[in-house]
Length: 428
Image (tube, rainbow, N blue to C red; front, side, top):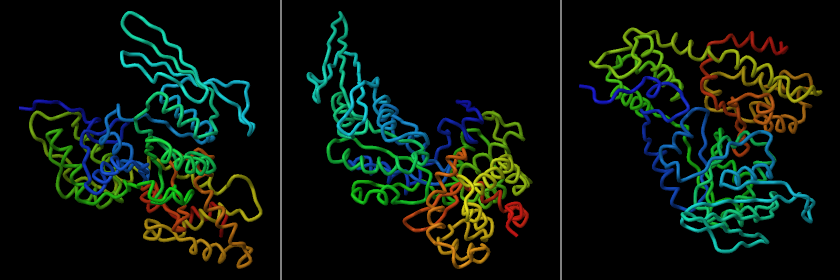
């Protein structure tokens, strides 16, 4: 007899909440948990929809952290302000300016409960205390410079802040803000016990260290991208137990082989199979599903749902930020569409771009290498500007490799006539 009924949407598929069939990967989960105790900042990186956020949700309780969602419009001041707001402060702009010309802000925090906050404020702040019959309410008002990480540290210390600070979608921040915050992280590490968990879509283990070499040994990186076949099979198996079903073994093997190591594609494929066979919740009697499924056709159906997004990405990326003499972004996407599937999956090296572009570009060997490099380094920023979310390609400045960070795009591209796509770019 089935004791607990689970809904299909809570087990398979891609949703907002953590799936019930979450699988612990020893080389990922254990590494993340181990680093939580080392007083280091942690970077969780990997391709889109590969389990970065669910890793954090699974390993930490909600009371262990606060979350700030990064936006492409945020300066370092905006990001610092968002951190203080998430910690409980109310921020208001004042008319006072710092020596450097930045506006100062009033930061107010109200704490309620029988456990009082700190007895005094530093940094020129003030405290007001109101007594009631049951609880005490303590109000802290500080005047701070959001551009100064030292003021942010003082503000968080004033309220005895002890939680992790999670920065989701760090890759959406402007490059300058990412660089500025990388320098701020060193100050957080040296002047406080505050630890950040930075979550970003990229394949570069040392992204923040590249921005600031002083973060070496102060930051631990966790690669959430790798899904081995046994882990993907375990995801299917965990869902089978929850729904009291059994997938056809041959179908499962073919789904894993055709998923490009993408757990989200695997989840969606399992969801669609169950939906077609009317398994919408835990079955009263064990049921076998998935026999005779045309897996390649199923995968085409799933990725074709994003066909419009991928086509728009190619067009918008080729246009670049604005029209320029060398049209470098058009030539970058030309290379992406030209290389074979194996190179595309493993990443395209910087010298490959140079070789292929110079063979076709009207400037030939006279083309400045700096133009190619600059365009590659701005590839993520361009996608954010063009509202490509999640981003599809990202350039690793450390290894000089451009990676596809949306695995569904790899499958979609394998189903397209690349010659036609290149022709649409206006490149003969």
